[in-house]
Amino acid sequence: NIRKHEKTENKDKWRGSQIKVTIGGEFSKFKRYTVNYLREMAVITPYARFEMHYVAEDQSKSFHILHARRSECMPPPPSKAKVHPAALDNSVLDNLLSKTVQKTLFGFLKGELDAVTADFARRMVDEFGPEFSYEMPCSAITTSHIRKMVDKISQFEFEPPSGAVLSPAGEYNLHLGVMKEMRPDMIATSTPDITVVDGHAVIVEAAVSLGGRRQKEGVQVHRFANRIPMLFQPGNDVSVKTAMGRVNWKQYRIDKNQHKIGVFVSVCSTKIPYGGPNKEYIGDENEELQKTVRSAIMQCCAQLKSRLSRAEALRNQKERRKNLHKYIPHVARSLFTLIENVAKDSPAEESKNDAELLKMLALYKEKKLTEELLQHKLKTFVEEADMEQAMAGQQGDDSNVPREDVFLPLLARSRQFCRDLHTNVAVIKLFQET
Image (tube, rainbow, N blue to C red; front, side, top):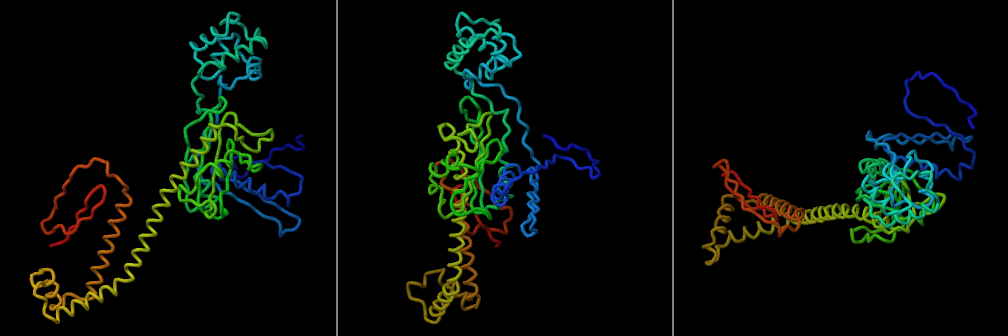
């Protein structure tokens, strides 16, 4: 009942919707559910601003929560959907016939059902039996007729329902929401193809994150149904069962016991397949829905695996470079000492024809070859070798890709080629000034 309804002057030209509700209850017991619900809403709807003020008798227990707006991209509103024939049963068909504005059976089939064209509607009427006709009034259809119609309709094959009428959050908004509220180290999102559950189109959006300020070690699943958070009975939900038992996390270089894993699954449909009358979880009975949820999570994991592999390769490369640089001064000192000793003694007879050695000794005698120069050369070699290895690792195995030789000439004669960098897709020729 409305106790008070009044209009006030909008001096600040404020626009939007504001709802104030007074609820009686033990807030200390249910505070965490309220806070979690607002946070989950901020994740799935980053285009909205959520603010909560709690004023307690004890001022030390008062608090203020603000989830700022992050996105300007709102999903389009859902449109009215026709009932797909695959979703019909006796009660649904009886309800549709009682509310339809169509006068005839042919008009009802063509105008009230999804994926039914005029030609298909005529074919359906013909298959129903001799007691049915195109001009049969909808008001004349009895319970016996409805049973026969449902039996015949279940034998037809229809085009799957379209998901155009649905209004999912979108990967962009889901990505922004998770980044804004959870601050993960890595995140991946995916949306598999539309699936059909009991004649209703279903869109599943998923995101998997690693790390974050609010995540705990292990797998934590966040569930949404038509952009509404679900907080209760997680153990029976298809998303929780799939994330916990149907995904091989080790395959994607993820340790489900050590890593902080956030799994976000949003299911959007004209009829959410809830598992109970309280609508607190999505049932796990439908195999198609299981496969779709699993596919969405695994697509995210595949993206994360690629990023984890690159991150590990970069860490190994950095560690290897660090170790090599640590020993460069010692190697340069040893090489310089060796050259000093060779220069003091006359080279062996078999080394007198070694042009490189003789050139090095000449540079040493002219004091152009120093220990600092050797260190610089070794550092340059390590950097080039690391670059070459990193490029080869990023390209992957492309041995079966057809190749064509391409030669790029130098533009200036004052330069000449000095070293080749080999990758799986090209040979990069370095040049130097002559």
